Image (tube, rainbow, N blue to C red; front, side, top):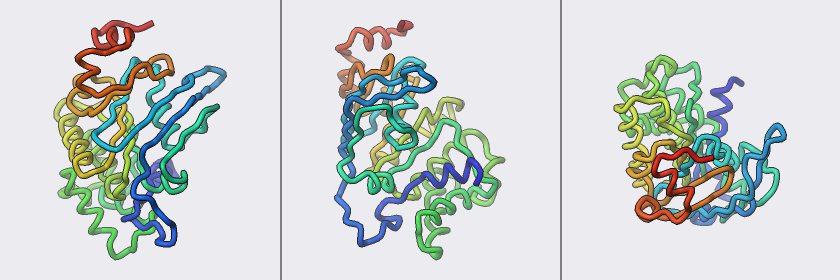
Length: 262
């Protein structure tokens, strides 16, 4: 299985996408509570005792300087990395929570197939009946403005189109929560606007979005609340309006002023 297949396999279905009826489900996998989360790689500590709670509602934006641990935090929460310590607690058992979330990466990997097939494939892995897969995939492509490119090879799409396809691939599974890791980092302004509009549509449809971003203007446009991460610690977690108007942590205030943090 190539990297794209692994990425698609990692998308898990929501109840609507085929969780067996015999598995009892709570109405929500949130809140997500994190206590004392630690992670290290190559002998280097990346996260130091992160405490955090993520609730349902508008998008949560994780911001902070390069090297703060933003991407690592998302991978830990999604279950792609194993923490060195601490606790990640969902409102349901982890196997249920994992099936009701998805993640889109900064550089999505495309299968060597059409755009449509890239969306159909994870639906098949999720166990959606064959008869409904193509229609559901086409609906997802329409939501992100790519239906007219359904038969084009995914790897021939532009960078912005590939990112929109990755969002369609995740959204098609109707997850309760989507993690987005810097989804516009390598895009031009027009492609960025298109992706941001999709993120807003996903959130408006009731899916919780947790997203990392290096772009403070983008965070202002999208965030309901802000998690400010610095040196592997959550320094401040606040409603977006208050964070941008009057950050309480000196490090957060310096970051907003554009200062380089030591």
